[in-house]
Amino acid sequence: MECATRVTYIHIPSNVALIMSNSLAPDLERWFTEHDARHLDELFAFLRIPSVSARSEHNDDTRRCADWLADAVRAAGLTAEVHATKGHPVVLGEWRGAPAGAPTVLVYGHYDVQPAEPLDLWSSPPFEPTVRDGRLYARGSVDDKGQLYLHVKALEGFLAVRKSLPVNVILLAEGEEEVGSENLAEFVEANRERLTCDAVVISDSSMFAPGLPSILSSLRGLAYFQVDVVGPTSDLHSGSYGGSVVNPAMALARILATLHDADGHIAIPGFYDAVQDWDTQARADIRALPFEDEHFRAETGAPSLGGEKGYTTLERIWSRPTCEVNGLLSGYTGEGAKTVLPSKAMAKVSCRLVPDQEPAAIEALMKAHVARVAPAGVTVTVTHLHGGRPWRAPLAGPLYDAARRALAAAFGREPVIVGEGGSIPVVGDFQRILGAPVLLMGFGLPGENAHAPDEWMAVENFQKGMRAVSALYEELGAQ
Ligand code: BES
Ligand code: ZN
Image (cartoon, rainbow, N blue to C red; front, side):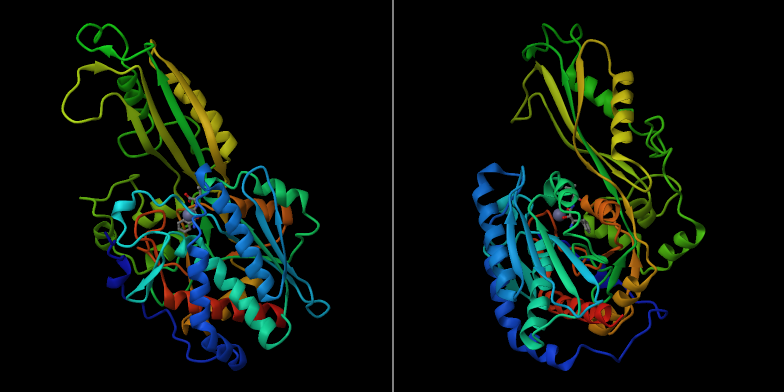
């Protein structure tokens, strides 16, 4: 089923200036227009490869996808290498022929995708891309193959038309973003010299509304856990044993119930210690964006919205940490009734983090809290699955000035600055290891069903994104 998008109802406020001027250079524009159909065909081929990083049965597909991408990067006129890691390979493309003194830009994206299940909820098969009503439906269309590939095509445009690029380029694409980017920081550390750059540019996020280009001001971090509760060695008759043996499902429910207080605040002691409150200006900026709770609620289909007391919906998503159950498993869940006391129970629990929370510190707090509240009579273990640091954008400086101009040129509108509730684990690592500013300008839209059935990307944004990043390379080269 398709999600209604909140954007359909939005009014762009009058303080968002309309810019009529400076569109893309005519030679590049002509080349893009001539090749738009071919670019879409190639993206189809990229999307047909089921590079599902979470599933080992797709390891060969994921490897094949890295090889396919490396070939595409070479065809665009860069060099490309496929580097093995402990997990899925990294694709590294390079072009270093820019005029002396030109900056070096590192473009990052991911070629892995989320699992496509449940397959029966897709209107067309996830790995057979199709365009309906200007929407390109396929797993990975917006997250992130379409957004990565538009960079490859922008680079190809320059090299085809101008035989040169205004900036040196490093293209780094990983195959493990959707499973926590566990091996990428190590790769970046090991290749720090080679990856030295003046700016990191990423398109793996969304615009706030159609036609409204957006620059990200923040990403949340993540700390992901599995909680296992084990009681008797096997399931037991709930009449013969219930009431005398501690029930692992009930024990798990009690543990989970201690994670929040009645106002929706997280009740793990110390959890908020490192949280930076947003200043009054930042909160006022969020309130000025065109957003209505009721439209957001309708998009989710939930009967009402709910969350931490004292914050608006966008503040809750962008500026506050969370602790959520992502999955639960215990006991009898089949048809009808079975009187049984389960031998074990399991929950997947993840916390989204905001600056300056550290995943390792949250892991320690979570483990100590669960150990403290765990009922007697069961064994409880908390395993940390993966994590990533939160990130806040610098928002000022030449990179951001260039991005504002480039987006205005491609979309005819000044971009808005927006937060983000999701995570891209490596972003904080780039800033820390390479010391370069990171820019997130994405071309997705709200309601494009990333990670869900019927994921799509607007064909128009695939094409405009290509033009916007070309304009960005031009702006950066001119600085
Ligand atoms: N493209 C997303 C990040 C994102 C999410 C951007 C929502 C904009 C809106 C990325 O591919 C993603 O899904 N990241 C994971 C990271 C996790 C597996 C460590 C996420 O946020 O769940
Ligand atoms: Zn994703």
